[in-house]
Every structure is written in structure tokens, then in C-alpha cells.
Image (cartoon, rainbow, N blue to C red; front, side, top):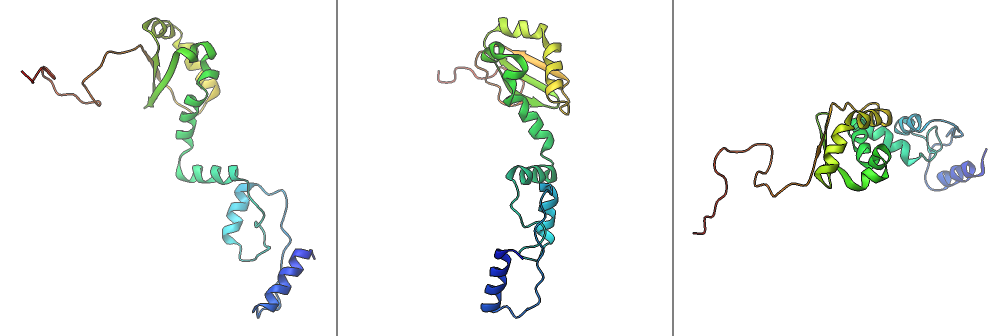
Length: 167
């Protein structure tokens, strides 16, 4: 029996534990973090199975899978790995802005960059699919710098728009 187990038994006996026949199991080594997390919830013993420390990465993986965040994390990975996908020179002149329904919007520093990247969009889509195979990307739209726009959101009202009303 380990020293920590014997100390624990002694303290439990001294400080009010009436159960003399506690049986303790030694913690198992080599279990995956996912199994350990499940075992912790079911364990009632202080030194029972699954009471070893669990890596934070394993817990985050379990939580993200249970919450259904895996697809969103993969999509966010495109934004984080943009310079690896397109290269450092192109990444310095472009920035991915949004990814909605398989359509990636990329803002470019100039219209010349946008035009050049439109010609290479197949190569970029293939690079994204090789880095992130679970992301379903159907289209990439490259846009240059824009003039100010009074339309906010995806819906607009027909009409003349804002005019000089201070007359």
C-alpha cells in the first residue's frame, strides 16, 4: 500500500470515518483523458480509478465534442492558419473576414490583389481542403477596399437612401 493511501486511511479513521473497511484501488496509468473524465463522474473513492490529473487538452476536446463545437473550431482554424494556407506574402496583403454557409469572404489590400487571387481561387480552395478536410468550402470571394456604405446588414430598403436633410 502506498504511503499516501495509508495516511489517508489514518486521517479518515481519526477524524470521524466510521467505515473501517474502505478498499482503495491504485490509480491506473495510461488511460486516455476521455476515459478518465468519464470515470471521475462515476467514481466515489478518493483513490479510485480515474482520479489522476487529466490534461486540460483532453477536457477541452470532450467539452467541444459534447457541445458540437468541432465544426466551428475547424472553421476558425482557417483564420488562424491563413498565412500557412496562402503563404506569407499573400497573407500580408489579405485577411479572411467571414465564413458563412461554405462561403469565405477575403478582404484584399487592393483590387489588383483581389483580381489576382480570383484567378488562383481553385489552388487556395485545394490548400484549405488539404489543411482542413472536414470544412465544406464551396466558394471564396475576394473583395478590394470599399467606399463607405450606408447599408448595414444583409437586408436593404429600396429608395434613394440618405440625403442632405440639414437643408
